[in-house]
Length: 81
Image 1 (cartoon, rainbow, N blue to C red):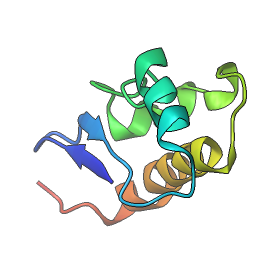
Image 2 (spheres, rainbow, N blue to C red):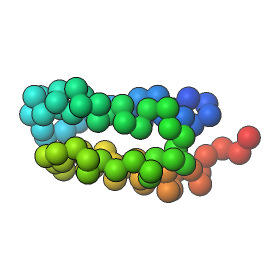
Image 3 (tube, rainbow, N blue to C red):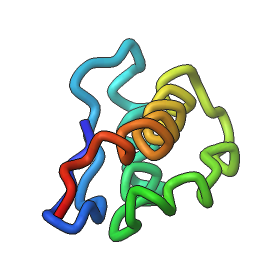
């Protein structure tokens, strides 16, 4: 889940479900993985690569893939101001 403010700046990224161990998710949290994109505009999401995190699993890659999808496709469907 990606939470943004009204200006489409990312405020939080959270997992709704996953198949990872709790210790791995906690390690990602400690490493700052989920906060990597905090305070970025949706249009800036693709500037960050999750590959920098060793042991990147399907979950970490899925988070990155979904953020990229949102940046590339979701922006087109945002309400006009």
